[in-house]
Image: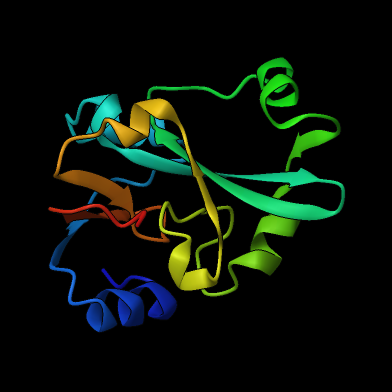
Length: 142
């Protein structure tokens, strides 16, 4: 199973070792974690947010949820989750609706939750498709 060319080039350029792990088709990171018998706090997910016409990428464990009221308190003002049509435009080489938890290769400035900052040194991340993820042994957020 292939991963998005942008992500693949980034991993190679940064000399990041990874393994592509196929899984059954799933539409949510929580279901992916369950199907693959991975703890939800070990699978990272990316969530695209929109505020005042600009986009942000939040990285958090699959087992965590963003609450709009908390987002507005933390980030202030008019914060919303991006629509799938917007996501498709932002990540053109990813499967429809898939959001990579590795934004740096797409030119994103990342906002990691406290929980994901405490993450262990090895973690599984969506690989820009809905049928595989990558396993890495060091942080891709840096």
